[in-house]
Picture 1 (spheres, helix red, strand yellow):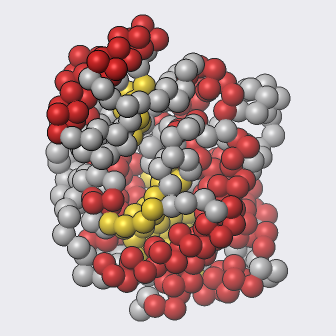
Picture 2 (tube, rainbow, N blue to C red):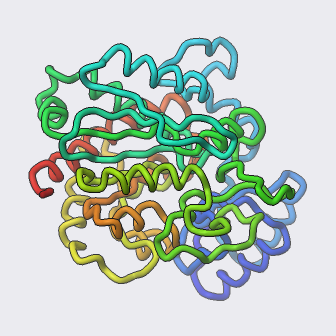
Picture 3 (tube, one colour):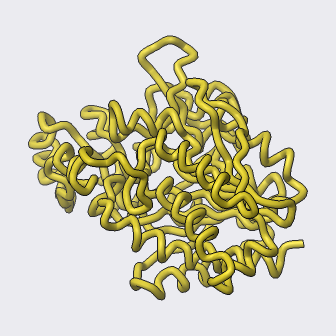
Length: 382
């Protein structure tokens, strides 16, 4: 649905306060605005009441997912059975991804090495795949646990890089002159939780307060105009302080330690089909706004050339919604002037439950956009 005026915005916010829906887009009731697409999930018990209220208030709406559990089960081809093998065209559990990172470093020692950059709240090792000491593009996926297609892309990217090196002219040129530091799953604890307990979980699993309110939104926990959402049950809770979370601190410390060589930062999320650049915490334009806009435009055109998938691009705050404490803005303010965020497929039909049949086409088209950005950074970054 899309509120057409302030009266409808107020109605949706009032409705949200009474039924406490799970917001998919935007991630919080605070971000609802006129002409903003709004997707949310309610329980089966609340569905009829919510639909009645929407109709009474003349809110045009569409029920996209009628049975969430059925949609969750349908996301995995063949269900959860017969999934022993790791595959790039499937969503893989963390244990398989961790083993895959080790295998990539073992099988392609000249191109890939694996290092541990920290530990999660639940003491799981956080791995980064890297190579060499040239200009670097830092990439992370899975900062929000339920965005499975994000982590699938980082794995696909590494696979394509090592398998096509020496054959694909563009990838060979990029790997000969650039290094990619890739974190395939940033929010490991939350990712595991989405496989075992709650498919719709977004945050990490921090429980420092020993309360029922668990987790911090890691993409609100970076020191970039940090603050804003201090209400702990919120899905966008920003944490007790900037970099309060071990996952955030591990990434931030690694980037700070390698800042001299890191020229680009790309984070992958879902969903909405957007390519965003700073700022998210203000509507003010960054000094190289026009340059980032040109790069984003070229990347989106490259992406759409394969399957005609339509992306919107622009600065984060005016394009999607304002937010503080994001990794995008933090990376830019640290001096990484080519910083981008992808919101991958789709635009809401499946939302966070993008079927496995969509992994390959999503990753193939996104590879074209990433290559475009990387090529630009290679030729332009000092």
